[in-house]
Length: 322
Image 1 (cartoon, rainbow, N blue to C red):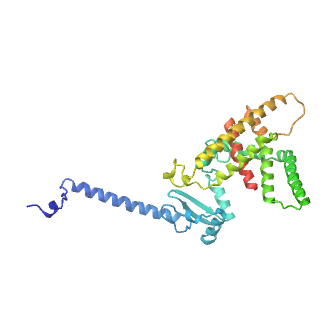
Image 2 (cartoon, helix red, strand yellow):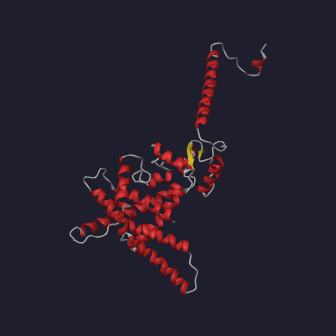
Image 3 (cartoon, rainbow, N blue to C red):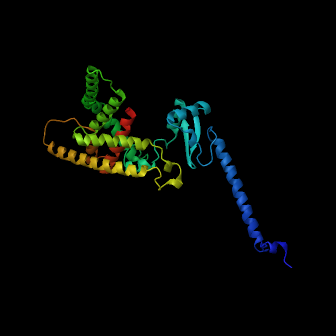
C-alpha cells in the first residue's frame, strides 16, 4: 500500500542527502544575515538619504532641471546627501561650500570624472582632459591649460576674436531695431559664444567648416548632457534603447573628420610660416600642437589627445557660456 506522499508523487529525501540540504539551508541563512549586518553597518555611516525605490533608487527624484531637483533634496535633508541612481550607481550631493571645501581637500578621487557611455566614445577612451583619470596626463594638461590655454597672454591675444563676435551681435540688433523688428537675444548670444569658442580653437576656419563645427559642438553638448539609461542600469548596456550610441558615433565620426582636416590645414600653415619673422597670434590648436611637438614635454600628446580635448572641452565650454 502506497503512502500518501508516494500517491502525491513527492519523494522522500534520503538520510544521506538530508545533512547536505540542512547545511546548504544554514549557509544560505547565514549569508543572508551577514549581508543584512554589513548593509546596516554601511547605511549607518552614510549621509542622510531620501527613501529609495526598488531597482531605480532615487532616479525618480531627479527631474529636470537636475540642479533644482538637487536643491530641493539639499534643502530637506541637509548639505550632504547620499543618493543611489539605479541599482548600483552611488553618489553624494554636496550643497555647502564648507563641506565641498573639505571634500576637495581630503578626497583624492574627486578630480576624476566617471566615463559615461557617451563620453567614452567622444573622449577617445579618456584621451582628452575633461574625462581623463587623475594621473600624469591629467596633471600635465591642467598645467598646460592654466599656463597656456587659459593664461593671461592667450586670453589677451584672443580678445579681438571675442570683440568681433560681440560687434556682430550689436550690429544685428541695431539693424533689426532700424527695421522695427524684434531680436531673439538668447539665440544671438548663443551663436556668439559658439562662434567665439570655435574661432579661439582654430582662428582660420572656412565658412563651411565653421558651420559644421558649430553644429557638431551643439550636438556634443546635447549628448553629454542627455540622460542615458545605460549609465545606471547595467542590463540595458549594449542595447542602445534610446539611440544615443548611434547618434554619438555619428557625431564623433563627423567631428573626427573635421578635426583631422583642421589639423592638416594647421600643419601646412605652420610649415609655410616657419621661415617668416613676423610672429602670429596663436590659437588653441597652435598651443596644443606646440605641446605635441615639444621633445622635452613631460607627457607626449598624440593626435587623439588633441582631438579629444577639442571635441569635448570646446563644446562644453560653449554650452557653459550659453
